[in-house]
Structures are given as C-alpha cells and as structure tokens.
Length: 495
Image 1: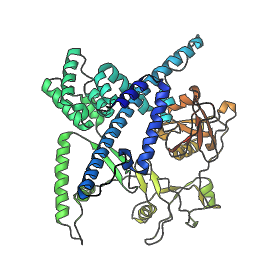
Image 2: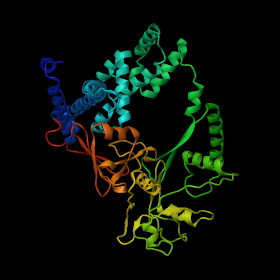
Image 3: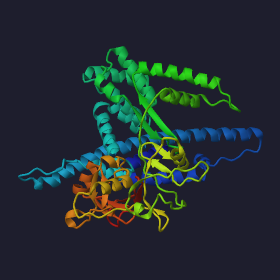
C-alpha cells in the first residue's frame, strides 16, 4: 500500500459514520458506472505496444489487473453483505430501545398489546427488498456470530469469508455449550480454512471434524421424521415445468434411485424414435412417472380458477349471468384441433398450466373441471368482481375472491400465502370502511399487527393496488400476486 492509500485510510478513519457511508455509496456508484462503460477502464489506461512482444505484455498486464479488480470486487461484496447483517442487528437493538423508552409512559393496569422490538424487522425489510422473516434471521445470525464466533464475523467483515458459510458453521456448532470444547473445535475449523469454502462443503467438513472428535450432534428422530415430505415448486425459468423436492430416508432413497436408474436405462435402450435418444434426465423423469402411475388406480380431483381467453367467443354454456354471479359451471369440452377457449392458469406453488393443456384436459376421457368465471363479457376483460357486505366479517365467496386475487400477504415483499392470512379492512370497519373486495386485503397475522399497531399507513385503489408508507416515510406499492414497487419517500420524511 502506497503513502496515498495510507493517508486516505487514516483520513477516512476519522470521518463521521454517516459521511463515511455516503462516501462509500458515491465510490460504489462511480465504480459501477465505470464498469458499465467498460470493465477494462477499471484497470487504468494502458498504452498498446507497437511490437508483438509489447502487445503481449500489454494484454498480460490488463489480464492481471482485471483479475485483481475481480478479487477486490468479491472482497467488497462479501464485506458489504456482512456489514448489512450487522447493521440489521444494530437496527433491531435501536428499535427495541426506542420502543422501551416510548412505551414506558403507557404502562397502566393492562399490558400494552405489543412486544418490545416486535416490528423491528418490518421497518427494515422493505428498505432492503427482503421478507421480514429473512431480516429477523439475518439480525439473529449476526448477533450469534458476534457473541459466539467473533473471529468468523471479523473474517466476513474483511471479505475473506461468505456470511452464509459462516452461518452454516455456526449452526453446525450451536449444540456445543462447553467453552473448552467450542474453543477446540473453533480453532480446528479456523486452521482448516472451512470458513473460506462454500456452504455445502463447509457443512460436510465441519460434520466430519465433529464426528472425528466425538462431538457430532445426536440424531433427532422427531426432527428427521418432521423433515420428510414431498414438495412442488414452479420452475424458475420455464413456466410449463414444475420442480419436485423429496426428503426421505437414505435407505429408501438408495432403493428408489436404483429402481429409477434401471427403468431409465431400459427406456433409453428401447428408444425407437428418430434422432438422438432422450437425455438421461428425461429418461429418469419418464421412469419415475411410469413407476408412480403404472398398475395404479387413483381417483383424484383438483380445482383450478380458469380465466377465459380474451378472444374466445361466448358460448351457450357461459352465460352473462353466470359470469356476473361468479358461478361455478362445467367447462365446455373442446374438440381436438380447435383453439383453446381458456387462458393460461398460474397454479400457486406449482407453475403455469397453458390454455392448450387445459383444452386437452377438457377433451380427455373422464376429465372434468370447474371454471370460475371472472370475464367481463361486455368489455372483453378478465376482471375481479365482488359484492358488498354490511357486516364486519366477509362471507365465504368474498373471502375466497380476495384470497385468490392477492395470492400472498400484501405487505411489501412478504411472501406468506394468502390462504393462511387474515382479511384486513384497509379503511377500518369502525371508521366506515366497507366489507368489500375493494377494501379488503390479505395480511399475515404479523403484518396485520404491524398495520394496526406499528405505525404503517396503507391505501388501496380500484385496481387493488396498495400504497404503503412506513413510520419513517418510506413508501411502496404492492400489487395482487406479490409484486412490490419502491416509491420515492415523501419530502422531508427520510434523510
């Protein structure tokens, strides 16, 4: 490090914290702007040589400089991630102190209905574009590292370790309570460099080390049984695909793996189509499906809310009064070759079923399904309609309508499903708010309390878009389906 860097570091060390953070932001943006123009501009101006050897030397110098820039960027990225997490921990502490002081004068005969710091994560989560639960976990992880593994926290802040890896190591060691045993294991982990590995590699390394020392965690049969299951998730890249995750006993997994592999090899060897045989992955999927459904007799039913395609003509089976009253009717069976009368359906937790696939289902033998009609035939739009109730509690049809519309909790960035959420009156019922779809939103119980007691303001427009404002003046739009859009804070509210 040259003298200018030393002097700059000394000058920055005496800078006020908020000024230092703003300088960090300005410098980060300057580097990002330079990288956007040309990453090579981050390594300085290098004169191109005239001779062949000079050109080779120039390229080698640029290559080394780019590698150094990438190394620094990685260190800064890891360090910034760690700083964000320790700041989240500090933010929670400040909110807890603020709540404790501000609620002291409210103490009376009845306890205040809130816990100190209950909404700390909710205040910071939308600022970071994260779920409240993720921010709370982030703060807890930082507090744990600070108290039990300060050396790991220091490595993360210096950018030499990923915070996610440090959390994995901390979780693997959380059952060790004796200080001497913890110090011994920690020393071995540090010397082995496990904190510089990826998360999975670090977990395997630490578990192997604990087994060698006789300090492995005892098997929790109850936890193991609770972890078993089968889950379906939408594919992140291809809407028409679904991911399935299965957790089962290792012995059963080995047996299932052997059967699937054998069946897949049989399918691949018997490929009779033209061109190249299908991939091994495709053969394994086909083998799994064959093994699951062959020689089986299963009667199952599923319900989809299927909108009509915008250009599909009304039919006798789809009468206007049925649409306006949100009735369930039997879908009209389509003939093969006809264009689908159905639009694509986004099945929560699974993925997208295309209109063509729905048409094939409708045309298949023994397949029937119901269509919840929400199409405005007069204007050719797919809309959501609801009725008005004069009571506080919405009736079942209205509740289902709001839940289907929202899909998830309407608080910024929250992803808890609407099916397990409360129905909240945006304008309180006691203040004249209607019990209608245009004044009801799905809020998980935690964010329902945040809206009622935590100082958050929210309004809803005719399109069911909610505008939220935090106690510090930050604002967001949330739309049905889970989209969150940050807005500029109100003038004078946020520094």
